[in-house]
Length: 176
Image 1 (cartoon, rainbow, N blue to C red):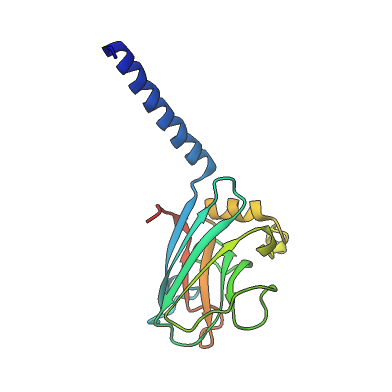
Image 2: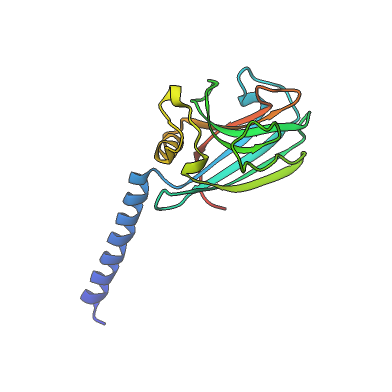
């Protein structure tokens, strides 16, 4: 291959990489994470509890695969959710991640005792609202847009801290 052909191939490859990167940015990215602590709760809590949340939105936006871990909770876990709310604000539940109260939608998995890992896949059927904040049940695209906008948080509620013991604002992250 001559030098001119090699240059053309190289430029073409760089252009393809640039287009792929631009598409990913335009879609808002697909991987999100958060480190759960009591200090992110509203009001902030001093607790030994901690955790992580990781989520990956499928490229076609039809489902979200997640992994929630938590440890050292000061009481038995009651529920874990993703909420629609910016940092420092308590807001409505969009989806359940696990539930021990019987208040979650049918098929919601139980929250194991701490330390634990909860994994799952979220789809349109898992979205329950919050309708007063503009998300109707089943509006999966609204969940995806809210996550990409940085307007969601994950938290774990416990018997001691029923309003939430640990919380994390979801942020863009890279797969590990």
